[in-house]
Amino acid sequence: MPAADSMEAEMEGDGCIGEWIPTNAFAQDENFVGTVANAAECVRKAKSDCSSYDLANVQASAVGTGTSTGCWCQRSNGATISTQYQEGAGYWTCRVKY
Image 1 (cartoon, one colour):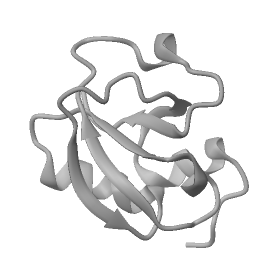
Image 2 (cartoon, rainbow, N blue to C red):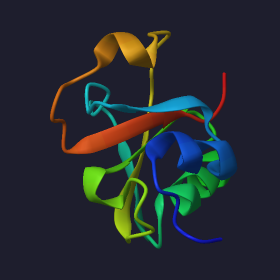
Image 3 (cartoon, rainbow, N blue to C red):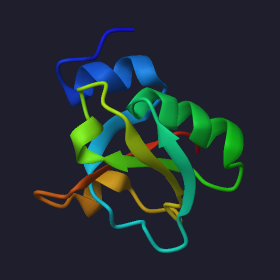
């Protein structure tokens, strides 16, 4: 799949529930699952490798570029991701399951 030209376009094809949000507010207790080829691969790994986590988190540089990135699984602990928006965050997060 070619790289998307925006985060919204990428999230439509990568399996996120909702939009990617610039935030790293859920980093406490995160689980690093490795380096992946792009944000969509991180979503797939989060869904398959992190059964007790509900968020995928990538480096901002991977957003919409198809660039390799670190991939972390994070927990929302019931919070809404969009309320944790962080202007200029170096990481982006999306929900992968409820």
